[in-house]
Image 1 (tube, one colour):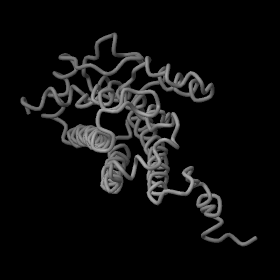
Image 2: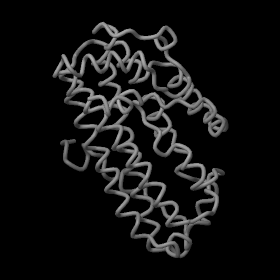
Image 3: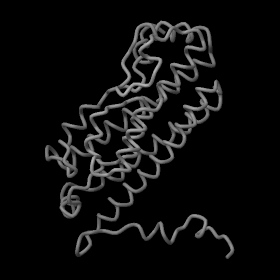
Image 4: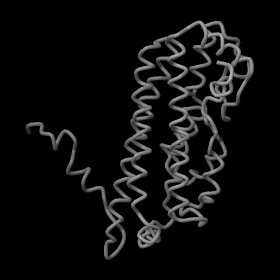
Length: 259
């Protein structure tokens, strides 16, 4: 059979995946499904791209890492823009089909949790929310134990003569925390290596975009359900706020006033 646009993209399968559960079908449920399915596709791409950035940093391929980071930052901008579409759902329109979600929630997105772990924002306690799904639980466990993008950055810095404390030389199952020794090395490289300055600024830009997405997502949830608990068993807005303004690369933020 000749390859076509439709068959290459498997459009028949793709367009059959939107199955509203409300009966009769609520008009806005299709928007809700398509937007979240699209988010999962973008998460898949971000995992793919950031795995490459991690590999490039470990291998001293600086400019390929910079190029891929630029693409990843652009994807984040699209993620934020999609919230504008979701915000066209009023609280009443969402409530018209919310009960059909049962306990399903974006809080259960394993790909987003993988993305956090890959970036170094590791919280082992989050695994308890995926215990009922064996393969997903195992995948998240692997992500927790493997090197993060931050670990790759530490390795790159060490090869540039930055002192990396011993407890930071192995992957951790906890979030990245700022370290003054690392910050001193970053300052030296900022002032002496323009190529690395580009990398550091891109990482900061990506971090800012990730925090922007968290903020917009929280405001979306607050605007839509207020103080109600999330459908997936989470604490809703209160839970989401715990990760707000938690930088992925805290050392890059800690030195801003010294640059």
